[in-house]
Length: 289
Image 1 (cartoon, helix red, strand yellow):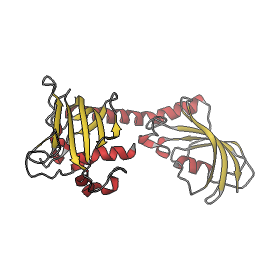
Image 2: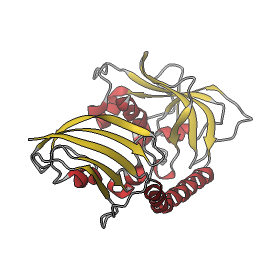
Image 3: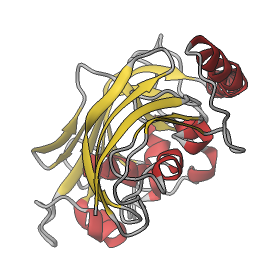
Image 4: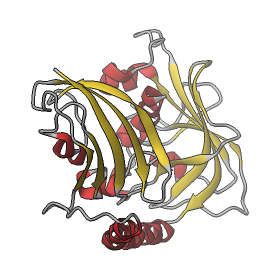
């Protein structure tokens, strides 16, 4: 899937379709003066015309000759943004998209050898140089998101992020009060609460550590619970975790309350940990050697 999206963005990024005239040498297709091979299969004249700055909600089939490489038919999603700085009339996909309306269906084509000249390392495995293969983008426009709507989405997103960031200190303070935590935080906001002091080897760079842990959000939702074995300094863990158990002896049981700046920050972690989320880790260090 990752490589497929590379293919989908190739033409958008500006692959030049070499042209000499308006007659396409791909049967059933026309060609613009700049060299874009296209075929309009369905026209919805009542649909809104696409303009520069629009982001398309579309169904797309990407294929090499008759081999389907990607399809989201039945599951339309945001696929392309028509950008003014990439549209210079040189046979780019943007040129073809600007012909369309919401509800239109079209197919755009490029000879695979032409694309390979620019993206040789990202061509599909079934591509065979010099065999005249053709790459097709079959596009059905389901909807459009205007530049103004995109800008409003961005403004709303940043406003929500700002609110989450500003709410974090109060959320931590409420959690600490509710759970009767008397341990003071460190200067960077990290809470290290030792529930049981161990007596074994201490955690340090280069040591092999085994432990059990449970990670949760402040509201109690557990996002992970597991065992872990790793060599300190050779595995990228969040800063709050690394600092929190550094110097702790084997046998120690502790709780870490990690502010987001020492966790996953404004990005969060996929759909599991929201942006600006403080984390609570209950950890038992079972072995250090």
